[in-house]
Amino acid sequence: MPNDFISESMLSRPGHHAAMPLPMRAPHVDLRQFRISKRESQEKFWGRFGVTQSSGSRFETGLAIPMPVAILLKLYVNGKLNDGDLQG
Image (cartoon, rainbow, N blue to C red; front, side):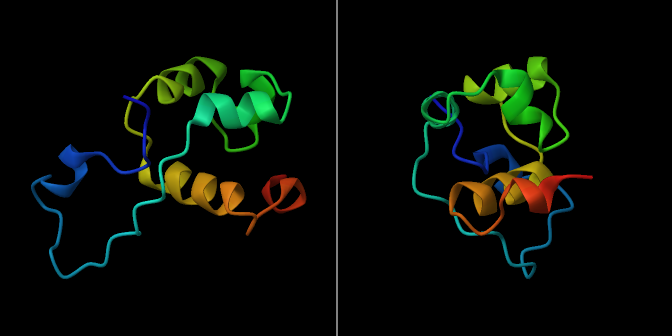
């Protein structure tokens, strides 16, 4: 099942504070199709988030995305961040 930014295991992780607000779950976005629609390689697309091609490939197939990357990705997909914002 493709990733939808926050895995169920993250919600039940020990040490996760219940009072701490969680980012809202994004509507399901097929990350692979989103990347392909932009006509970008995995290396180029995931590189803007500081992620290797190998990890990006795993994220596209359902591996949980680390929270900092998930937040950036969600903002990017929703048009709140652009490439200029992500250049380091």
